[in-house]
Image (tube, rainbow, N blue to C red):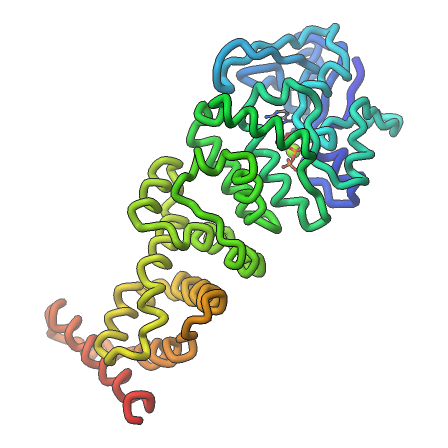
Length: 363
Ligand code: ATP
Ligand code: MG
């Protein structure tokens, strides 16, 4: 048997990036031979093993054949006669289809190194169309590598358009969409994920309510927080549509909450200085600012970005002044003998007085 380093580790090494995880391919071995060597089988769908010591993934070289719609409809052959080139051929991008032997020889039948140098995301073969997840993966790699100047090859983009037109994107399951979307939110340029999906037509199928806003996308690129990236990308979408997108893709609450908070309260943010103190306190309470100040500060940061894009009022300094003033502390003794309702009223009055005392209200 022969073992090769493959996929992302080879790519990242050539790019001079830190290697996240190592994936290995084993050629010329059987499942039994692997088990005899102490590997532990983990793959449900195809033979993948964990190394007894390093716990890195070792997969038997395999070829895949599409036998049905969607991406569950795959058959595979992982017999010991499958070659390394056969295995590389089933991969999505040329830059992901290189292998490195133990002797340090690069095996690169699809010119991935050249595409890496020319910064091109290019599919390996026509079999690309067999798995719609690849559309999401390309969009995600664009989000990761556009900082280095990578773009999608025109012929790959054409293929992605064909897949969308053939209805392949309809077969994507919600979990896979969210998984790739979430990864993209953690990349350097998450906005590229939507840009690529828009260009091939997948955005219109997967997220029909989302309209791309180039200025806002550009302004958001200074943010490196995935939850904020999520909320900003949904800004401009109605609350009803945000909810249905989050339901459809089973988006975790932490993302959902921030997007809803931003869309609900941005209109208040830009008007807040025109309203009386009672209204400001109401705003601080409804955004749960006192208990969830980290989230509240994320909200304010996003409002600043949006207000800058649309040339609308910046209210953060004013809001923070009120927030700090109203963040009152009180002694246990003050609350002695009071009911829950009375405590609530007491705190409300103290906060309101603190806000009303701000010089802003005495001009
Ligand atoms: P990352 O740095 O995000 O881990 P990666 O390229 O290693 O990037 P993985 O998801 O770990 O991506 O997959 C490992 C390799 O398996 C890829 O480099 C690619 O060659 C292949 N691969 C993964 N998913 C697919 C797919 N849906 N279609 C074709 N090839 C795939
Ligand atoms: Mg990987």
